[in-house]
Amino acid sequence: MSLIDLFFVLCWIGLPIAAGVAFYPVGGLWGAILVGAILFGVLPAISRVIWFCLPSGRGKPTCPRGVCNEPDYKWIYGIGGKPVCRCKCGIKFVADGDDFQILSDDGSVKPFKRWDRKLGWVDAECNDVQCPKRE
Ligand SMILES: [Zn+2]
Image 1 (spheres, rainbow, N blue to C red):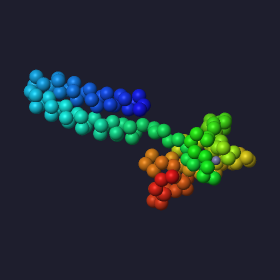
Image 2 (image 1 turned 60 degrees about the vertical axis):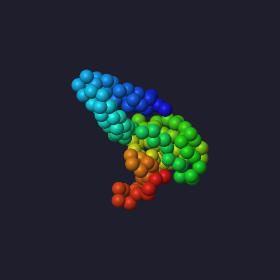
Image 3 (image 1 turned 90 degrees about the horizontal axis):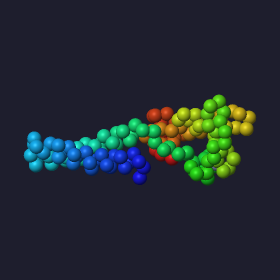
Image 4 (image 1 turned 180 degrees about the vertical axis):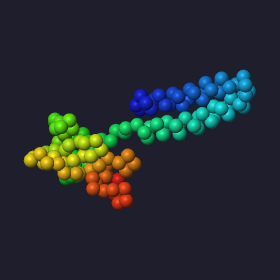
């Protein structure tokens, strides 16, 4: 569990109880329970929205040969301010924002994968109309 998860769990449990206690003098026992219950349901929904908006740990796509995954990539250097990494097969990649491109020995890059917030890594050429489901 990450610190952010822990924070949300603490809020999730603590805030409804605190709100219920605070509301008790006004709304009585049932009022307090109602306020607590609403917050108990609403907060996870909010946290899910916030979580969705945060940059996620996207990792790296499986390499073109289908052998290497996240731990097999090593960051080696950067070109033009963009980080370059290499997988165990020796293929080099340039990470350019949401694009993951293959870097050839002659320095040219060709599209490989693109990060999609909903779908994960998709083929770089794919557009919203025709996308594979997931890696
Ligand atoms: Zn590889």
